[in-house]
Image (cartoon, rainbow, N blue to C red):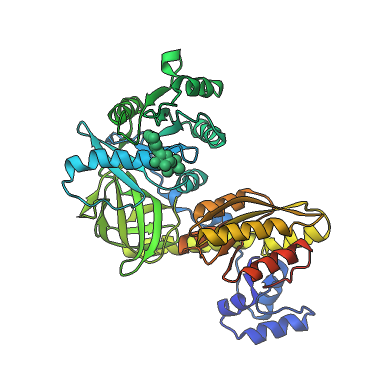
Length: 481
Ligand code: GDP
């Protein structure tokens, strides 16, 4: 299964035309891209007199399991800093709080240091380190959870004290409960006269997040990302919570890290920001990371400084991989280049199996035929554009497109590139299309879309986009466009 005609020909080193001819003689009209079933493979191997073993993708190698380290039981493990994710409703101040913490703390140690946004950073509080995940949305976090490689030790939920609990706050509470990570609530925007901390406490308590001062078990820390008020208090509380968790790692183990962000950079090639879980990641290490591998050429921290090694819970940009890994992917240090390459290749095969086991039929085509059959009443759309003007124009035009049978529901829209968050959203919503206007997905976003079987459609001409959607609505979309 899962092998195409041309791949079979390549595998047995015979011309494709011969393979197609044999199939034809057997009464099977197949073209080079068609998949061969187990029966066909068997017949073909007899015809060509070759040995074929059919490998179950489940047997494909999983290096993470293979190299699983039991940090808990490691007698050489010592204390490591906590890793924090800040989550909350949009506009409640996640970005502001992350900036405020960084600004308040980085200036102390790194005089004049120019900080870079690399997806995570570490600050010092009373001589103790705390690492924050610094990614917009929660894309990285959700990837890690899906892969079971969540690096977050403590979740800080930000709630604007003047706004209270909102839909995304509830989502975050759910995520936090599922993850089992301890929660601290940052009551933000306390500088505002309209702040009502007690109202927020009441709302949170209703959803199972009870304040300590009300007899519950969750700390609510009043802060202002704007004035910097309460930030020390928040960091102190993080350290107290971390103390209880007894977070440990073995600095001398083979390094294991998790990718937080990744991209293809001019001059540097594929780069990935990682947070180390165990061991020490060093320049010169051979590493494998999903289906990519390489030797670490450089480690660059958030202050844009080249460093030689990275301890557990610390973060840096890794340079030296042969391709861009997806965020949430685990990076492992290997004994040799050969070993790293082998693991990467096996993983590549495994990914391919997984990909092929998904339907190869376009989801858009499915939706079109469902519309034609009257099975689909609403088409969800996630829309990204390069500028605000086109966003508004497209939103308006799309909503006018709705016909009697099907309506268009724009579940998310925004200005900017197509992100992993967008792909995630589409993948989690049924009958949803992802449209980009004058924006394109980056390599890692494309990789995720492929993995999730999400179709990304990008356009640079408005009427083409509208035409395609109109065709879908009438259930007549051409199979390929
Ligand atoms: P995010 O969407 O959660 O990342 O929220 P942002 O950090 O982008 O903040 C949303 C808006 O709230 C921005 O206009 C901020 O300037 C403002 N804001 C954030 N924190 C505070 C605060 O502590 N006080 C006040 N007055 N405004 C804040």
